[in-house]
Image (cartoon, rainbow, N blue to C red; front, top):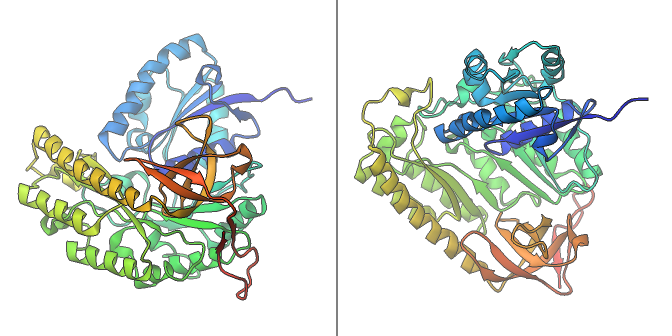
Length: 460
């Protein structure tokens, strides 16, 4: 008779891609380790890292230092670091942290069980080999009641933006075979799932290099046709590769949510060129206009960097002007920080830290105004909400998201978790919405891949 499983705690830094990678770590270790949310009882403590910004990397190093005490209390506990910082630092990280047992890169997750076995034998392990094709994925086992799924469809990036470390720590672009993706999504839907988010460093270039060519839009169409799919999302998109075909899909595919994350990074052509982004501000704004033509209710979010080397006040004002024209519903904004191996790290015209901070404050004030304005427009209207769980604000409330990705808190029975309900927006807050469940409303959508099936309907 097998004894109880050991326990693994996984701390995740970074974006949805890292969350998906952490889920895969738990999956490949499932035969020997059960997940725990209590780090003090872990037999295996894994840190999944992000190297996109210096602040995220600093947090990882700080956490590693603080874990020396836990390691002393639990000497049998194995401590590992995975992801982009591990890929970037490799042996240097192992040398700098004596209580660290294993370091594994972005493509080493499939080899994690063997690494853990070697570390348990007292060997310190480093595995930062990058794959030359999409790494093998185990067949996923979906937990009962899973509402949303993150499905990785590609790895790496070929764009080499001058500020970005991704091509160096994630490697070149490799697409996952479409049959594997469709099967994974179909399994999730068969288990009762509702929403799927397709992930990649640049999903818009999905399909290049596969034996049988396929575009990202063609993949979306295959997934949209699957029985039971209520919502489909994707991230992240590079504006240079946003095709007319993909833009049109926002007006054609019933499951595709009216939300797009489209990082612009800067609103100044001179800076965009120095970033090697491959488009102009006018190119970007034209694509935004076309998106809103085919999908008038589209919610648009973005990423913006301030204080890139050589950025002048005029360049920054170009960014502020683009933000006003694009009218983003949400944005993630950051001060530029140099990353290892990138070309921008060698540029001499550094913007002083105090100027970066002042510009970031001005930008975030404007972005907050736009987000609050977008939230106020929703008040008094009924919207479809996918109920994701209990609200962080209050255990008496539920929390969910609109198709346009805004967070809504409202009162209702816990039996609604995992369901689609209609909610009337009652209050707008800067970062969320407050709602009331609409009485007598029901939502239906095609439950069969039948071209004659009715489209999504709301009846009240």
